Amino acid sequence: MAAGDLVELAKRRGFFFGSNGAYGGTAGFYTFGPQGAALKRNVEDAWRDRFTIREGNREIEAPTIMPEAVFEASGHLEGFDDMLVECPECGESHRADHLVEDATAIEDAEALPGAEVEELIADSDIACPSCGTPLAGEPVEAFNLMFATDIGPGDAQPGYLRPETAQGIFVEFPRLKEYARGNLPFGITQIGPAYRNEISPRGGLLRLREFTQAELEQFIDPEADDPPLDRVRDVEVRLYPATAQKADDGEYLDTTIGEAVDDGVIGSPWVGYYLGVAQEWYERVGVDTDRFRFRQHLAGERAHYAADCWDAESEVDGDWIEIAGFAYRGDYDLSKHDEHGDDAFTVFKRYDEPKTVERATVDPDMSVLGPEFGGDAAAVAEALETLAERDPDAFDAETVSVTVGDGDDAETREVDAAVANFAVEEVTESGEHITPHVVEPSFGVGRTVQTLLAHAYEVDAVDGEERTYLSLEPEIAPQDAAVFPLVTNDDRLTALADEIAADLRAAGLAVAYDDSGSIGRRYRRQDEVGTPFCVTVDRDGVEGDGLDTVTVRERDSAAQVRVPSDELAAELAALRAGGEFDALVDRYESVETDVETSET
Image 1 (cartoon, rainbow, N blue to C red):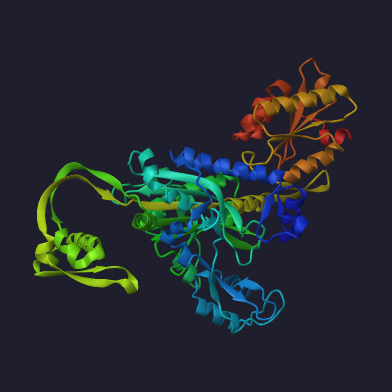
Image 2 (cartoon, rainbow, N blue to C red):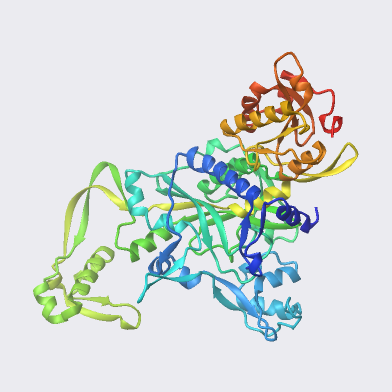
């Protein structure tokens, strides 16, 4: 398949196309047409079925705009950047790491330091793709990808369009834990749009400024909660570990989830579990497993909070693209929001038996701290409490030193130990507050859609004529079936075709109706949008013994079988749910005359 064939088909048949074409288009934004929107919705439904319903998780829908404070806490304001290089001649901005990847054999330049990328641009004589001006010596700078906005009129509150759906889950954790009755583990999912102001959008749906994510945040007690690994222990996967990527002769590791976890190739059993679940799901929706792998992040590209991270990657047009990420995020996210927010981002873990423990406490004499430290008195008292928890031996001295304020405003205060009223008490505790860890599978829905289209794109010949078709799984195909009257000048055929189409829609099936052109052309149109089954109403079906029948044609094989019309809806529903067409042929009379060529 040539790189442009799929894009051309997608535009012609209504899968996706660049947005705002009447106004010159806007890079990084795509509209899903009727076929694409249906396909995308089916992918989302299949993901929801597997990662929400079957895993026993709960789904939320959070706002896409959030206040600035959220992203200060999460670290996005400071570190959510890509590498930008600007052409000194035409002023066009480019993603520096992408230029390096296009011009060299380096696959993951994003993991390299900016200074090294500058050197590679110079050493590789990389020029501006727009005007050809050499970019050697131009600085590579960090560019924050978030879209800024204002919340409210006048002196508005600054806000940002979310760059990931995850933060909408994290900030609502204090309430979400109540719905889970404070019991770990529990998972929250969300499917929705995210926004990134990409420097150089490219590759169709692969790098957009507005895109859809499907994410699961699994909250666990790292000391007590283990994944149900036995469910996926025997799932076969193709891994590309970091060690293999760095080796000159590194090769894929074809193994099972259980062996990879046992051998330490996958460091986190939770990450291993979700790699196994994802492998089965990708196979279910139609990803070609020969063009699919899990690649481990190298140290330079792994987020500082991630203990282990793997990407699901698919091959599209000769390139490997990330379509999902699986990260063990530790307690980073909840700890940051606990530090910055006004609520508790912990859960209470009850002990099996109450424990008696010694606890250091202080009861500062505010009648002394107030006059001595004025407005800093409360901060000094809080610092004393923190010090008692962290270093109780500090109170053995006559005076205690604490620091109040941050950064350049930080000051050291000396407090008489007697004023602190330090004591060690025995207390009986029934439990403790812990900060859950997070395991995150994050899927790019648009990238999955483009992968499915690329992997389903097929060309063959039927009756000596070349045809293009999309071999999409019935579960995710945009339409379940198409209904055709063989000819339009016979009222019996058109009436029965209309009735059948209505009955199938009433049964919940997505059905197209087409009576335009030859039957062969109608088949070709449905083949190109991936419709798995076509239903043709012909004269043989209404001139029988009183029981109307129709011809059902299967897309990939072009095989046909005659089915009673009153049993059609149930049979198509069974096929959509995974039934075999050969079994349908065995139950009914196969068509001896090829409808496709019998009449025009």
